[in-house]
Amino acid sequence: MAENNYSLRNTKINKKKDNKVFDINKINLRKALSKFMVLTIILLAFTAYKVVEVKTRAFDIYLGEESLGTVRNEEEALAIMEDLRKELSNTYGGELVLEKEMTFEPTHAKDDAIIKSSVLKSAIVSKIDFLVAGYSIRIGGQDIGFVKSEEEAKKIIDEIKAPYLEKVEGKVKEAKILEDVLIVKDESPINKVSVHEDLVATIRQGGKDIKTHVVEVGESFWTIAMMYDISVEEIIEANPDLNPDTLKTGDEVKLLVPKSMLTVQVVEELDYNKATDFETIVEKDDSMFTNQSKVKVEGVKGQSHIVESLTKENGVTIEKKIVSEEVIKEPVDQIVVKGTKELPKTAATGVFMTPTRGRFTSGYGPRWGRMHRGIDIAASIGTPIYAADGGTVTNSGWAGTYGKMVEIDHGNGYVTRYAHTSKIHVSVGTKVYKGQHIANVGNTGRSTGPHLHLEVIKNGAHINPNNVL
Ligand SMILES: [Zn+2]
Image 1 (cartoon, rainbow, N blue to C red):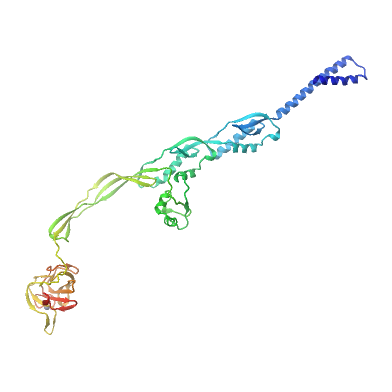
Image 2 (image 1 turned 90 degrees about the vertical axis):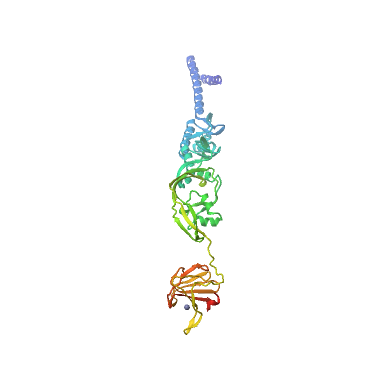
């Protein structure tokens, strides 16, 4: 090519030479000049080529096998990467790890083939996985969540324990989780990083969705239980974090008992004083009736100091045991004396006995112009008067002209009255048996000497006592 140019130019030069005088030296100079020009042209062409080559120099970016586009220089791509790292790191915290290697392959491309940096940025975000360094929470060999730091993982476990530790009655001796829980250093795609509160809820609910009720004004666990036809106990169990007494509008109440992924076992110790009952010892006494008893020695309660251990799992008591019991004060036995003597029957027999021994002095009927409604039996003061039959005392005490009087209702239509007594041994309401000593003969009221005035009333009307004695 250079040779051809050379000859062509020679031809032209030769034509021009026809009209002029030629100096052979000048011709040689021209030849030399021509050669120089050719060289210059070649150099220029090469330079132009070189400029274009440098100008179109570019790099294809690969992420693993995948092409992301073409950039003019590596630095630009690396700067975008660094930007992204910072941006994502600020958003998610923790350390960002690039899963696949980013490579650059030299190429040539015109300006319009170069990817815009904003487009490249979104291409990177959409096509590559950023792995976040952090910690997986593993329960029973299964990863249930991923958090940024070990501290956060521990905090989540503590939050699961917290409500059960707040509700202890005594002091906590031990609090542990029964399942195998591991906090493992791990990496996770950014979109799989757990939201703290969500992870706590997931663990508590056993990974299930639990229906909730938002509390409205005036509602309580009780009204909510009625509304959904579940028991108050179930609501309490489903909501260990809620206090039924401080429930307020807007609180969310879970309506199902969630089966937590974790079992929080809390062993607590209670310590208290307890009164201990005394024993009652019964002694027998055949001089007393079976319905009679008396306290010979008053019993006194003792006191013990109890240490009790309570084991609860997720708030439910599963074991209760006495760790120690120390007697502070021994109880004093109570001694009661009880009668063994058979009790006489107080029911009426229907047959009357003569209530006292003495001399019959006056009968039933008209006497001194008025009606004598009973009979008189004279006896010395203090002579015992016995109930004519079993019954209940319905009157006892001073009764005007009767003096000190006892009245017994026998419950079978008959009532008897015993008047002018000196001393009464029964009171109203006392059940008396036939022959029971109820009073003593006296001279009280309108009386003309110590005697018993006896009346018998049958169905409300006086009858002659002699007819029934
Ligand atoms: Zn009389």
